[in-house]
Length: 419
Image 1: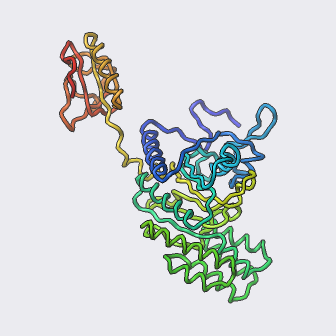
Image 2: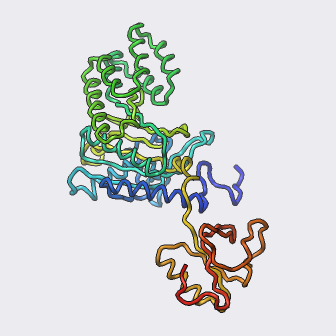
Image 3: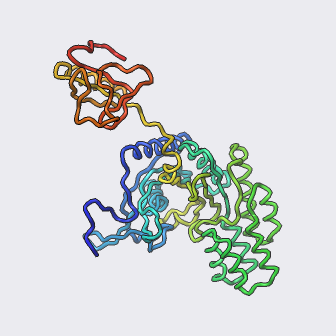
């Protein structure tokens, strides 16, 4: 293996230049503020966790974990999600806090993918966990908050698909009793949204024509509240029936929130069936083929950390949202202060005053009457006259655009003069 060049990066990671970072921070701030208004408190956990605790409890498959050894030979992992670390904190540092707990987060996530997959090995998520509430009201709350979070981030067109792993578990157990391997294969096809492969697999399992048709009918269970009625008539299995009743309750609450127009029931959407225990959901934006938000109920996780409790939550894929709304976010307007030797003291004092008011200010020593700082850049060279800009005007200097230019040359800026 050849030595990497000095400017190369590992596969799956990227640099974010100032323009992109500014937009990413705007999205993050808007979403976290939205979550705070819903009563969620932000939490931070370490980037490194023990493999034998958080790593094993994570929903991420073992081959997708980044592992390393510390100087004592203990295996550590880079966090591959935030749910397991939060479960650890809820069961330890927050053990005396009564339920329900509402926690939010924004963090970088690390997952190992094959080089040819073209997926990020490091990306950002912003999400919430609602711990200690098993009700349909709690599930509806996180779905409604996910919708509000996408809207706060600037995503305008999206749909949320809601399913329930209990319905599929009950249906398959009724139609394929005791055939766990066959059930697992069918779930894998649905998890990967491979409906063609799902139909082909049905023909290879040696089922009766009636059973095949009933399982093919599952693919048509996508739509509004009417899907609940259709699903109830598909199977008498108690687990499946209870799951549908739970979905119906969630739908009623979402209607009360006034957000059901963004939601469809999709009983083929099961999420990671080894991890989720109830309701699951994914949100897709109109202009992106990947989900921009995902979540669900995971009632078995916290017992692995010694504090059994129901829980539900979601994560906004912040990096993917950046692809959707990045160009629509307006960068803050900067102020440029130019000065010569005579005006320096007053110029720097004015910069301090404006920064104290929250303005973004850049200072530069220039030659009056022209703006001469560094070499000329052709069409990017700013107007040469040192003057105040009229409303709506802007100037380019050093490759950046400024909405305000304040000159301090040869005493031309009076003390206390403000724009």
